[in-house]
Image (cartoon, rainbow, N blue to C red; front, top):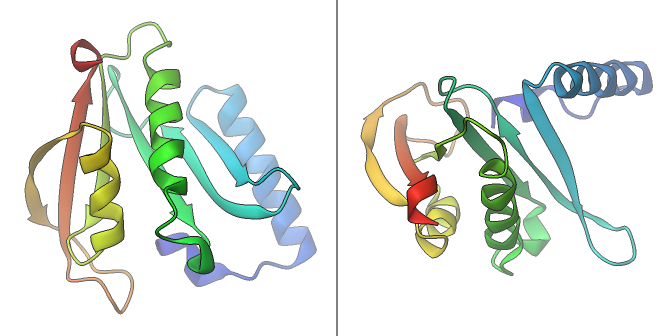
Length: 142
């Protein structure tokens, strides 16, 4: 993910980032969530993002490396999909990931998303191949 290139942030940078997230939430643009276990241990993050047009929301997620493969992202995406379809006017959600990210591919598959296609994209991490894979789920599929 492109944002990881700026990590770790200093405390003032982190505070500014949280302020930005809050403004974007208040403006109805992005809805970020932390993923934590019962003890409050941070496992990852996820969110809904208005970046695919007025009737759709993009779903993003990441899971801490030592917790990948435990169904955390799959459960988060299920909850985000339900939340997205509770918003009036949202008729579809999409997940985009690089074709090399096999773990991310399993998440939409397990959540009943339809593979829409692949398109060239900029590789932003060394492990990426620069192919964007798009998955979609429509409100009528739920």
